[in-house]
Length: 70
Image (cartoon, rainbow, N blue to C red; front, top):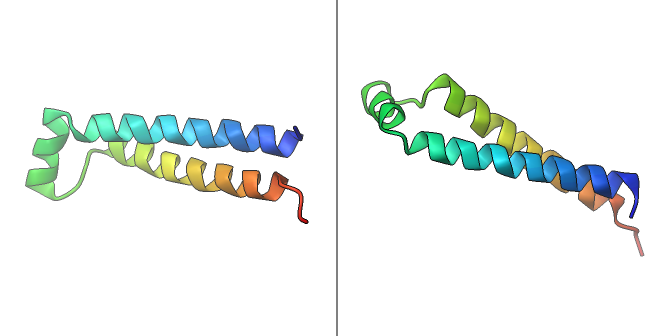
């Protein structure tokens, strides 16, 4: 297993954990009330969501890059 694929798995896993925290945070009563009143999630939830999306995309790209072409 190459270092690129290992890094891709790690980044993808961290991104998935961030998305999980964003999902859990968006279901919190305070966050739901904030969304109803302002139309947006709280800042922490948005950072988790953004970090998770970037992590999943970057991890997927690293995994794709690490596979041999044939």
